[in-house]
Image (cartoon, rainbow, N blue to C red; front, side, top):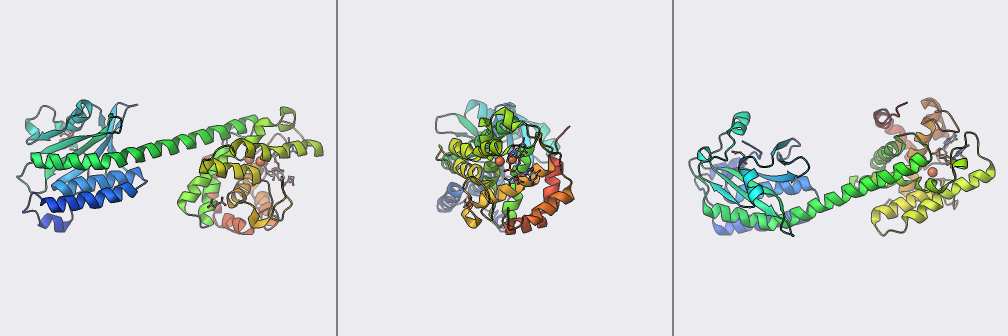
Amino acid sequence: MLPLHESASPTQRSANALHELPPGQILRIIFDYTAKIADEQSLQRVLSLMADMGQQMILADRCAVWLIDHKHQEVYTTVAHGTEEIRIPIGSGFVGYSIQHGEPLLIEDASADYRHNANNDHKTNYLTRTVITVPFVGNDGHILGAYQAVNKQSPGHVFTQRDLEFLTLAASYAGKSLESVMLHEEIVATQKEILLTMGQIGESRSKETGNHVKRVAEYSYLLALGMGLDSEQAELLKMASPMHDIGKVAIPDSVLHKPGKLTAQEFELMKEHTVIGYRLLNKSNRRLLRHAARIAHEHHERWDGSGYPRGIQGEAIDLFARITAVADVFDALGSERVYKPAWELDRILALLQEERGRHFDPLIIDVFMQQLPALLAVREQYRDMK
Ligand code: C2E
Ligand code: SIN
Ligand code: SIN
Ligand code: SIN
Ligand code: FE
Ligand code: FE
């Protein structure tokens, strides 16, 4: 058998004499859970809440939500509270039938039904007796996945038409939230991909080493957490920081790829990459791109006011930009550039300490030193291949 959901609490089990809840109690469950589900941003938690809701409403032994992976022609579910995924071919079993045909199933005796996939029971050492599957339909009518409830908590009882109706009701309420959370995850994933790609374009123009933007993103994330930002802010910075050098796309090759030291005039031109990046990114109203714009603008400002392009100082410099500055310089020094070899770690750390309170926010340098082992692990993980 499949997915699932370790079932009820001991108190629920002791109420097992009942195999149906009174309608008032079912409405209470729907009411409580749909409110919680509507507030959830995480797909994982929505799925888990939906499984709990279905299980409690119809006193199922196990309940799971299956989603469709069109690319691989599979349906999959995540075991509640775990991370392990179970996958089966898109048309197989009762779940597969409901998803392909867009119809619910109420199976009293699974073993007698041709759609039963007895292999799964063998694998998981679980006996599927009675099953309900209900498809979820999105706003424009396409099928998103299915609810699956397996076995009553009271042994010997089978699912009834009434159970099916309640699970269908739960599916219709929770389906809307499910779709919006899936859409949200899709958008965030797309944004991340676009930003990383744009960052890499900037990077390849400047011939910086392969994983520079990825490392800067990861360093920034760790430093943000160390600075006490919450994981949502840290995640935002991680997505925005790879864009810091996007303005380099507009710098002429003769300057960008110059093997030696830049003349004062060339360096003036190079400094423009901050303002150019800011103008490129600042056109959007999206929160993520507005952060990216500020980072591009201010990642070469210095804590003591001696940076560029504006020479602002201290906390007037965006926190995200101050963090990115440390991550960027740490990475630039450790990498070979057309104009310089890679530095040894000791020399890099000495420079960061020396510039504590001058180039860099002193607090961020302290956090950097505390987080050094984790930062070095990232450096190792995304090492440039020669
Ligand atoms: P980048 O190569 O990504 O370097 C980012 C920052 O890391 C630099 O910002 C600087 O703060 C630090 N950094 C990198 N290498 C060194 C170094 O050898 N010594 C020290 N003390 N710090 C270093 P900066 O200086 O504002 O430069 C911005 C960008 O301008 C650099 O990005 C690079 O693309 C370019 N650039 C700077 N100096 C030269 C140069 O002498 N020759 C060439 N071809 N490009 C340069
Ligand atoms: C399913 O419920 O869709 C698969 C398991 C089975 O066929 O019993
Ligand atoms: C500068 O100060 O802008 C030159 C690069 C550096 O040594 O940091
Ligand atoms: C925030 O966005 O809430 C703080 C980080 C920043 O200064 O950009
Ligand atoms: Fe830069
Ligand atoms: Fe950089």
